[in-house]
Amino acid sequence: MISRRRRAGLSSAVVALVVVGTFTGCGTGDPLGGASPSAGAESTPSSEVNVYERDRAAGVTRLLDSLTETVRSGDIRAIGTLFDTAATPAFKNRFLTATSTFAPRRFTPRNDRSGTLRFAGFRYQLAPTEEAEVLVPGELQELLDAGGSSDSWVAPVELRYALGGETVPGIAEAEVVVGTQFVVARHGDEWRLVADAEALGRDPSPTQMWELPGLQVADTATAGGTSVVASYPRTGPAVTALRRELPAAVDAVSDFWGDSWDRRAVIVATATDVEFSALVPDGRAATDTAAAATVYSSVDLVQRTATGQRIILTPAIRELAPPTLAVVLRHELTHVAARTSTALDAPLWITEGVAEYVGRKGTYTRFADAAPDLTATVRAGAVPAGPPADADFAMDGQTSQVAYQSAWSLAAYVADRFDEVRLKKMYVGVAASAVPTAQDAAIASSLGLTRAELLAGWQRWLVRQAG
Image (tube, rainbow, N blue to C red; front, side, top):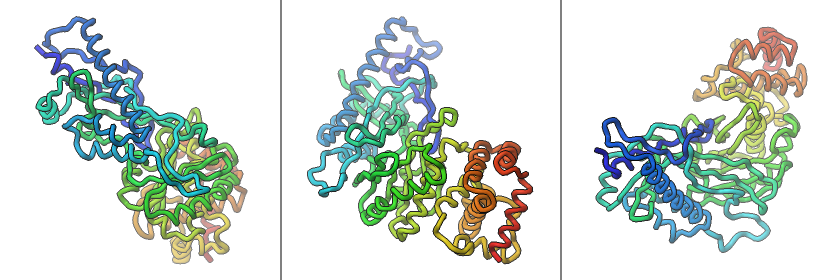
């Protein structure tokens, strides 16, 4: 016989984890995640199970409502009361930091809209799921038993938020959905937080910018409305430069791409490698260079929508001169503008090449200044046989430098021989698919050339430019 105590441990697993740089997974089943007794177990009348499941869901919903209100209000004293004694310091500190970030600031610089993030919506809630049920890990369950818990559950949870609101006109961000799991425990009529998915041996939920200490926010007006520059301590000069360069960078991207994008952005300046790595987990970036990465929560290529796009700047940004910073901004903003026209497996030679073209436009007078490594390679007789492979962009040293410069030069060649309208058309067609035949058709449609003719013309142009 399985007691109600044990049956409570069989809990609903969450929908697929939502991490920046991936699609959002979402189930459509019963959000209460009802459990069925194991084979051979004594059956329980369905009415009793439904009452039990409903009661459990209602109790955890109250806990999540309290978590939402406590974090949003910045009530540091209250947040500690929501945790079980078995909760790890790391798990608690994440919410303590978030709550501290939202706490009202007594002092802000005059004439500067700095302070905390503002939201059009922010809430934790139970998530629908059809995933198989899982047990609370044995050792953790023993701790909960010893602490007097009468029930436990691995609850499927969503954080739903959107930056903006009436006080920040122009942001109007679409709702971002971040899925995870919380281990929760019952004590009397109250439920408490115990752990997240990491306690189950899974990746923890993605770190949000407000879960790292010292977050500051400054609004900047750009063509599409209010852009947000978020930052951490020791990034002050970089933030000043970012706010100065951002409006012109947005306009430069629109000059190439047009106005069919938000023309605003959320940019985060990090001061340490730890901060950057927390916000850009390995393999989650849409792009990743020495200075920045562009990440996102989800993309719908059919509906042409993207949520949670962020430009995350590495600590190296603090060392960049303003002209170089402007190049980085234009490059990354091109990825933001083009995201809904870019397949997840689009070839990097087109996505990085066009972003480099927009980023570097107007910053050089000689080919060798824009592409010194590629120039040396061509002068040595090693003219590229074709566009760089995706793997070349991830290599260290000269290989990656030549890859980026080669991709840039191919885009520059198309713009030089044809125009930027045809270059954008080629991007939209080629970036829509990883299938070579589909890319060949896009090249023919946009340029009237076969792939072989495009590459041959590019190679001749390279020799002339490098010579």
